[in-house]
Image 1 (spheres, rainbow, N blue to C red):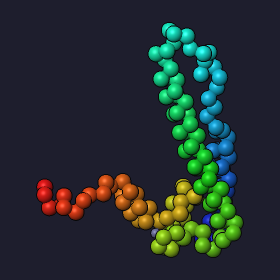
Image 2 (spheres, rainbow, N blue to C red):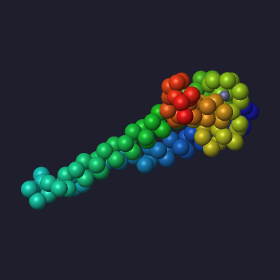
Image 3 (cartoon, rainbow, N blue to C red):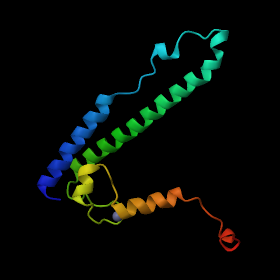
Image 4 (cartoon, helix red, strand yellow):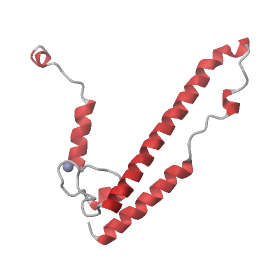
Amino acid sequence: MTPAEIERVRRRLTELRAEVEGAGAVAVRAEDIGPVPSAADEDEAPFREMDQSIASSRNRVRADQLLRIVDAERRLEEDPDSFGLCAKCEEEIPPRRLELLPFVRYCVSCQSAAESKSAKPVRKKVMDYHE
Ligand SMILES: [Zn+2]
C-alpha cells in the first residue's frame, strides 16, 4: 500500500473506533428491569429477560468490532508493509475493500471461502449417494 493509502486506512480506523466507542455499551437500565415483579407482572418476566439478552448480544457484537479495530490499528502500526495483505493467501486486499472495512484480514475470495465452509452443514459422504 502507498503511504497515502495507509494514512486513509488509519484515519478510517480512528473514525470507526470513535463510532463504536461513542455508541457505548447498551445499558440495561434499572427502570427497564423494573421493580420486583408482583404476581400480576409474572407474565412479563420472560420478555424482560429477552430484552436483556438482546442488549448483551449487541454489546458482544460491539465489543467484537472494537477488538478487530484495535487489532487492525496495532497491525498497521507494527507492520505497515504487510498490512493490506490477505492473512491467508497473501494477495493484496483491494484498497477499496480496505477503505470500507479496514479491519478485514482476508481478501474477498478467502473470506467467502471461509464463510461458505462454515455456513454449510457437514454432510456425511454416504448421503451424497442416496438422494
Ligand atoms: Zn486471500
